[in-house]
Image (cartoon, rainbow, N blue to C red):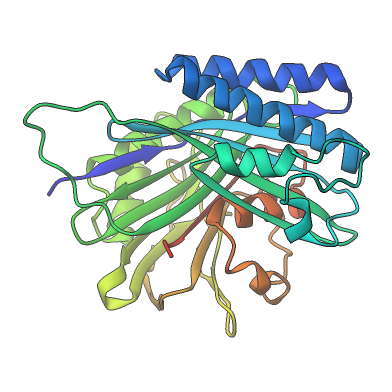
Length: 346
């Protein structure tokens, strides 16, 4: 089976509270784009977008944060920028995207310019709760001679992975693997945080991608054996079967997972335990996954006390926007935080 693997790395996180931070975000976006082989024009687009998003955070919300990451699938790469704030929100999103419209005494070209420069663009804003803006800039895939094309499923994903403040390494990680007719996804949380937790998470990802389409219960057992020389981890994985509108799921430890839908959102069951230390009997579950539903999986750096019904209105939004809104509203702040959202691409 041909496969494409997408493993998450921690985002660059820029807290924007004054103009100097806008410049910091612009330079971070430029450096990351250049490090992933973007040409001058594409890297320049990313720098402009980072500047516009940073300025918008200051003008309209007073402060916020930029999350920047590179998402590599095969030979293709996208640079993703998420602008997240808790400001007053937008009363009229359509007008805010129109050139010349401004509520901040500026030329009013910010969001319109970001939208035009982006290969993927989406936003969500709620009055009194804040705004999330997603922009992705694509790098053209380099041609690979005689390389067979992988049949990518029409999946859309969004992911956030950030270390606890003060740590340079993140003890959380995530992975998504797409095959010819299915996909597999995993979120792992190394026990504690810092380098030793990161080592456990890295070992879990390496074991997962060796055989990602194993039955999830078997994957949990395999990860348990792979982590015995580490401090251990919590993890959960799902194998997606879009043609059958089903998914198989198993989890050990405090990974929260749910299927988000417009009518009957539901949680998925993980069992107590720590992979690499204590593995109870692992039970595998099968869930319906109709078109339009989203899968949400996150570590305990995101509070599990969010109401699925309260966020059902987010379903039409891009998976990355859903991930960012949940991160903004429910990040605990005292641990690494990872959230992965997967749905079918519209």
